[in-house]
Length: 208
Image 1 (cartoon, one colour):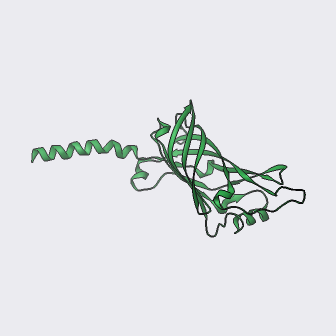
Image 2 (cartoon, rainbow, N blue to C red; image 1 turned 120 degrees about the vertical axis):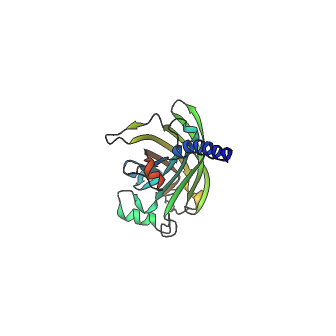
Image 3 (cartoon, rainbow, N blue to C red; image 1 turned 90 degrees about the horizontal axis):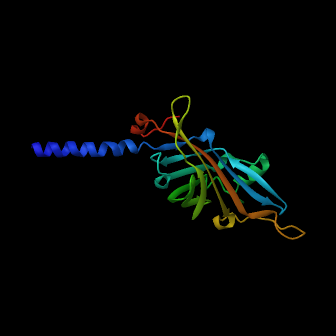
């Protein structure tokens, strides 16, 4: 009996730190933006953003290559500063937000390139299509504390995708040759993370 009790005590001590490390981080939507740029009529870039990005990051605050990211973007939060264009983009010709209301990225691996610079590879699900993409990440240094005592981290991630590979093939031809909308889309994510409180993590919730 004594041996069993000692074994249970040892198991508890070994698993307690692992639970504490699983508190994780969450994306602070109010201080995060997902921006994009696409060529218009082959002469200029049209830029826009998605105002609502959320998600979680499993990160020990020390080794970014071990982080695991799961982020979701609300398609209906798109803003290109032109309401009619936004409605068109949310419609069936483009994102079809009624059928595919979110964009999701789940990381698979992260590789350090230089001090503060990483390559993050993962699956991007957009318009019902999932493809592997790689983002260039700059940041994820040491956490800092805000005036409320919450730990925070920040990073910027960039990549380029071909929208046609995700089924976003709508376009129109120009009389002078070429097309109205470019195929390549540049993406920039400015992300701020806030560490979840231990008590909130126990309840499956995170702090604001």
